[in-house]
Image 1 (cartoon, one colour):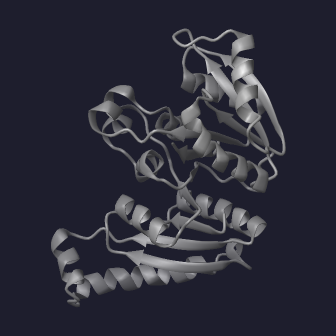
Image 2 (spheres, helix red, strand yellow):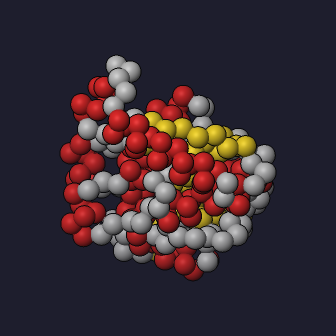
Image 3 (cartoon, helix red, strand yellow):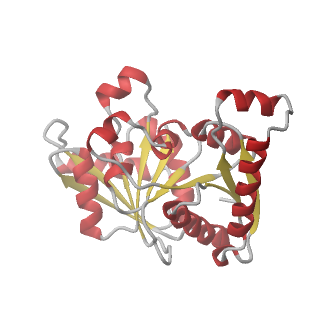
Length: 274
């Protein structure tokens, strides 16, 4: 977690994310890249690409630069190496492109969540990042104060496809000195006897060097409810999941537990791409 990307729209939720990113950076001697996207009309974007100076564009850009300079002086960033990027691009595309270009290790984003029709028809940038980012994404919903992660809940079925992303989960937990609460959610449609579930989890985790962990089985009506209720039960500081990144109709009909958690969880959620 040496390079942390923090997209900002200068909102309160973005500032919550920045404060969390700053604490992670300080603990890992990391640096922060502050990113603001200027989503301009198509014609303006063409003009920028051609190097044409349009007064309206320069006004927007100068205003953003001033805001970024002010943000870089925020007390939470004291002692941290911080760089700033202004990108003329759609927000989600810019976040993905900048993260790859700069070899970012972690993206930290603020989100207010969504519900009802808004949740169904309008995918937020945080949801899109969670779905498609190859880099771990940490979504923050509120002011976390001191971001000390003691209890890190990671929910999974612990199948073979989770092995690659789980290496990043272990690295994340070890660097934060957190205890991994590994949980398998049993639902009526996908139920495993306790002894089978324990065998699966114990066999899975034996392949990794996890500093601190415990295994759990939790029964609930569906996976999302199980994760949220288990996190409440153990008073988790962070919830983690792996995500498939489905597209199109497959995503519409199958949904995404990770995206649902982004919308509904109050606690921070971190996702790792399978």
